[in-house]
Image (cartoon, rainbow, N blue to C red; front, side, top):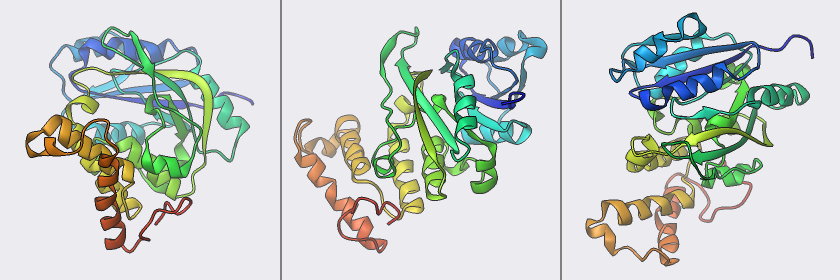
Amino acid sequence: MGSNPLVSIITPSFQQADYLRQCIDSVLGHGYQPIEYHVCDGGSIDGSVDILRSYGIRLEWDSQPDGGQAAAINVGLRKSQGQIVGFLNSDDVLLPGAVGSAVRTLAAHPEVDIVYGRATVIDEQGRALRPAPVQSFDADVLVQHCFIAQPAAFWRRSLHEKIGWFAEEFDHTLDYEFWIRAMQAGAKFLFVDEEWAQAREHAQAKSQRLRGEILRQIRELQLRRLGYCGRNWWEQHLRYLRDEKRGIWRLLPGRRDQRLYRLAWWPYVFWRRKLGGPLFYRPGHWRA
């Protein structure tokens, strides 16, 4: 390959001063060139702006109220020029060698649109908790589980030209919605068995604070994009209602009881029938 292609990375951020510097340093100190890096801050007042200013001309950034995470990423992507793009949340970390490996993989596989690697879930102090659940691409499995680690994913800019930007109405599930939409459009995914990123889990992360809304958005995006919602997501929502909302929901079957999975069959099949899908799920018919 001749000169390296430009890679654009966008970091959306809001009130993440505790983790922002580590995130930025993981990109700026990466070693791959050329990288175009833009931080889109949503008007933070926690010291984030001082951190951004401290990088001088090494970093492109702006700080102003925005329409949420998806809107901020879209602003950054529209400003960017990279042939290969990705986004890294301000509490996550990009590991050395990830960008170069992604670029080499895409160059070696011109038919592939999205590449993704492994990631490790870390805590507030950066201590490893567990591997993120990642596997080789399987369309049927993606309907039931989001197994693509977003901070360890890169894709061609041409994919946005084909299917559009991130859906701002699915602000809490923007990456999963994008994978589903790309899959439906015929995009090719490729898993690279290398550690590319660290995803931070902490009390203020959206995945912890907004589980109910995230599950609602997953249900809505699947009904809209696929015509039905995978049975696993119905079960996860029932578990959320039982274990976190409680009230009358605590009467749902116990934690280790398979009856909860059986119970999830009813909303699953109701929506499949209501939307004209087959009564029973058939592998290979994820488009319903």
